[in-house]
Length: 395
Image 1 (spheres, rainbow, N blue to C red):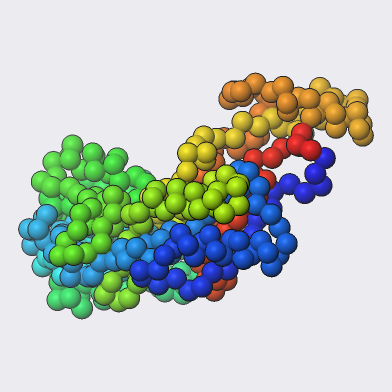
Image 2: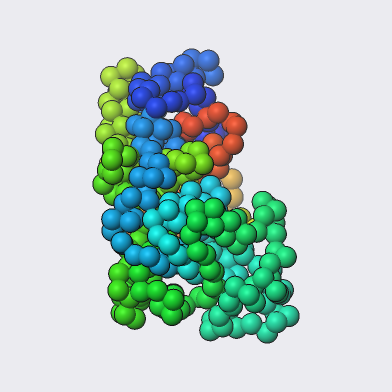
């Protein structure tokens, strides 16, 4: 039996710029690392590439002016309601500037005490002190400034109300902000709505339409086609990140072609069939800041077919402490291996799989890769995951 299971390696690459041949860079970097670190590729290894370098290499960018033009063409409204944006300087601030360029007034409806991924906008203890019911109460801007604006984010030290207000005013656009967990509240201000939430956007849009909104668009309906030569994405502005103060990098568009090109090139050069995926934010939650990492619309926008599906695993502890509670050592090991080899093809709902994680492979592996590469200065935008599909019975 192997003494080591899954192995994860962050692979360093050259700094990737627009127009680079990313497939070649990834393949060359993997092979170079295998030589310098003395390891071999194996069947079903996973090569994962962060979406950031995919979008950069394909030149999938859009300027503030291009975004503003698309919003103006699709709304043509002097007053736009911006509903449930993520509270992020990296994710949303440039987009908000573009929205402000496209209209004369913005009413920004913010959920509280946090946005959908867990970024706080006020201190929860202040809500308790002021007897606020977060399900029904509305906090207007004046009340926020009076009772809650002393808030500073645990990690960033900033107050996003102040940042968003100043960005909008800088574009000579009128600004107001209201806090409510009922999206229909925005209709008290304007019937033209841009729903900016990520994972709950379809529900929000349907609620607003049912409540009588004149027009509701979601972020994936902005920049879903090119405007004046801009980049674009099937996810529109969802998954975009700040590139500069006047430009964003969009979620990658050519990922599917990339992953199969890399898979073929590795097969041609090594004879090994690997799986390949593009990954963005991992799907995990920080226990201290309570931030759910997944601000992208999906963990993986592109992957090879061998990564379809979810784990079908038995819980070793369950068998060890129940069916084989009287076995030990080699006898126990052999019994467990036999259970694994003879397990049913579908264990969903079976006690044998209780406590396992029935998430998709791409979400699990993408989260693992995001934690490995990070978003800072590690310089490893490619991650190699080996033996992920092994189990205790593999020799």
